[in-house]
Picture 1 (cartoon, protein in one colour):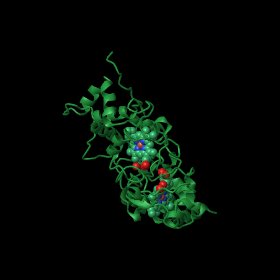
Picture 2: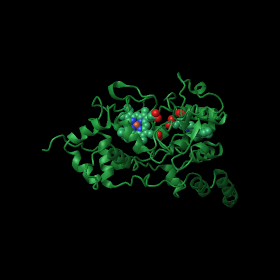
Picture 3: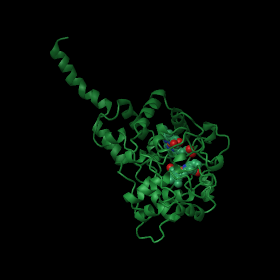
Picture 4: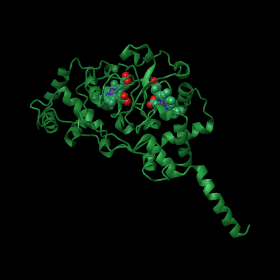
Length: 343
Ligand code: HEC
Ligand code: HEC
């Protein structure tokens, strides 16, 4: 072939080829319109983040002395270095008590409509406070008993005072909740998807771009919506058939029905956040499925009554991997816990 012919073929073919691949900036614009832009923090007017509050919250996140058997902290079930999930089907609390559901990641979790799979906690602050007296969690007999422990640890008083300067008695469960919540609100993890949305067309591979398109066109995004890819609605698990026919779960969970008593809420769960999902097996509210590929296949079957062909499944998997992000550096540094005595 003579060189000029080759050039002509390239000039004619290239735009067609690029279009078929999906114009990067069009797809980025679609992604931005569909999901939005990831903010730096999950701000809340009820709990403004201050450095002092978030720093105290991070320390409290590692505090085991406020648990019934002295071994439980938030970090036990949400280890930050492991994407804040424990890898177990169901979490294990004080005195080896098994929790009724799987521990979700707490990264990118603070901007949801509620906390927990069935939405029985109103916010991350509400969740943090109630964890103290949750029987399979910290298992303390009362908030007072937990606060008594914190008051007896000398090093906490200045930290609570700095975080809540207007409070004369700052060590109380509401402030525990606000501090831990403020820390959680800083846990946002930008990844390759965000780089793509923010203007780097090469941040995603061609397979990931196809997966993104499939995620939107197949309707995954109608439930896993918003910039965290979930957390914005409650939906029935098992639209086409009971969910346990897919997951082989041993005992069905009534889901949000437990909270509302409404028949329509049977087997309804909060749509989970999919950021970092590739890093947080096992899957579903009961940790019944180990592989993300199986989980995605089941989702298409159970929620959309669709059997995904192998290449679509592969592209969706590639795309979900682009939702793995960077854990904030400051969150990965384990803090020094306050000493009991003044030395
Ligand atoms: C014994 C293990 C365990 C401990 C300790 C624990 N959690 Fe959890 N966490 C869980 C489980 C299990 C769930 C899901 C519960 C449910 O939905 O019924 C959960 C859910 C959450 C959620 C909701 C996430 C979402 O997407 O809905 C947040 C936030 C959270 N935990 C934060 C914390 C904080 C903060 C602490 C410390 C105060 C803590 N957890 C202590 C196991 C634990
Ligand atoms: C009709 C709403 C709906 C649609 C459509 C939907 N999902 Fe889901 N998804 C959910 C709900 C609800 C759950 C939680 C199920 C449970 O564990 O109880 C979930 C769970 C998941 C999980 C497991 C997350 C975890 O941390 O355990 C993955 C992965 C997932 N969905 C991916 C997808 C993909 C990919 C699609 C498109 C093929 C999709 N979903 C379509 C509602 C939906």
